Image 1 (tube, rainbow, N blue to C red):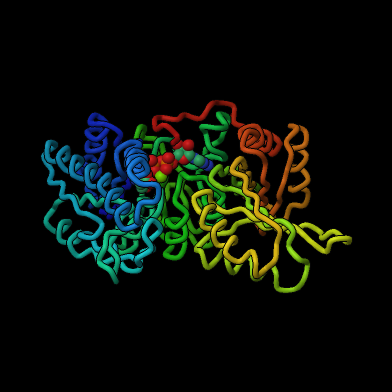
Image 2 (cartoon, rainbow, N blue to C red):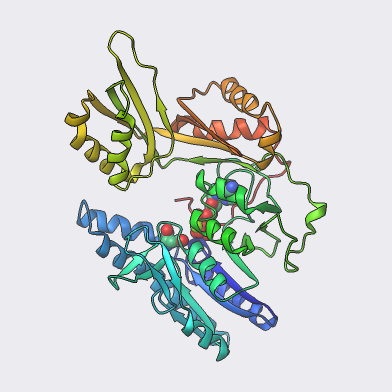
Length: 430
Ligand code: ADP
Ligand code: ASP
Ligand code: MG
C-alpha cells in the first residue's frame, strides 16, 4: 500500500461533470488499496474571475483582503469534490489550508510555507476518510491571517503535504499528458518527456513553463520527492520529475539506466515580464548598486539585466532590466523616488516583450547550442533585444508578437518536433 497525494488543477474540476469524474478517479485509487490525500485548485478560471472582480471594485486591493477573496475559490472546489466522493460511498473530508496545517509567512500573494503540521489529515486517513485540502492557501504564523502562495501555488501545497506525510509520490493532474518539450498550446508538435531531472524542471518552470509551480519543484528537489505530472482526462503514463543523481524509487515504472537523457529538455516562454530602462545613468562606480537596491527594497524580482556601453561624449549609459509586469509599477515608483539622488535622466517601460528560453543539462558539454539557437531566430526574422545564460539555460527577450514563432522555430531547429500532435484536453490556457 502506498500513500499518494493527488493534486487536481482548475481545468480538471472545471464543472460539475468534471468534479464527478475526478471523484471517481480518486475513489478508484483508494479501492486499488492506496491511501489518498487530495489537493484541489479552484474550478476552471474562477481565480481569474475573482481577481477581475477585485480589480473592478478597487484599483489596488489590500493584500490581506485579496487573499481572503481568492482562497474562496479553492473552498468551493474542495467542498463539492468531497460531496461527489460521498456519492460514491467513500467519505471525503474537506480542509482549508489552515485546517490542514499549511503555515506560511505573511507575504500576501506570495507567501512561503514555513511549516506543515497535517495532524488533522493524518487523523482523517486513520479514520479511512479521503482528506481533500484546498490548494494555494495557508495561514500566517505571525498574523494568523489567511495567505496565498502565488498563482499556480496548489502544486506547492501538494508537494509540501506529500513531504510532510512522507508520501510515496505526488501526482499532479492537469489538462495535458505531462511535461512536454514546449507548451503544447503553442507548439502542436511538442513531444512528451517521460522523465526529467528536478534541476531541468526547475529551470523550465522558472522560464515560464507553468505546468508546474516553481516553488513546488524547489520543494520536491530539496526533499527528493518524485512528482508524476499526468492528465486527469486519460490513463496514460505522464512525466516523472525525479532526482536523476540517485537510483529511481520503485514507484517509477522506468529504469533510469535505459533512458538516455536528451541534450535539450525543452523550450519555455514567458509573456508575463516587462522591460524597464533607466535612461542616462552617470557612468561611475556604485550607480548599478543604487538602482538595484532601490528596486530590491520595493520587493521587485529582477530577472535579466543589460548595461549599454556609455557614450564617450556624455559619460552616460542606459541600464535595462526585466521583471514581472505585476511588479512594474512598484519598480517605477521606487526608481522615481531615487531619481534625483542618482541623477539619471528618465525611465521607460515596455510590456510588449516575451522571454524565450532553451533548457537542457546537456548544454554544459555541447558547444554550438547558442549558435543554433540564435541562427533559428535569425532565420525566422526575429529580433533579440536581451540575452542571458546560465549553465543549463539560454534566454532571450523578443517582442511579444514574435513569441509563438520564436518558440516553434527553436523547437524545430533542435530536432524536437514529434510526428503527431500533442493533445490538450481542456482548460482555456488563461
Ligand atoms: P492546472 O490548472 O492543471 O494547474 P496549468 O494551466 O497551471 O494547469 O498548467 C498546465 C498548462 O501548462 C498546459 O495546459 C500548458 O498549456 C502549459 N504548459 C506550458 N509549458 C508546458 C510544458 N513544457 N509542458 C506541458 N505543459 C506546459
Ligand atoms: N487557483 C490558483 C490559481 O489559479 C492556484 C492554482 O491553480 O494552483 O492560481
Ligand atoms: Mg497550475
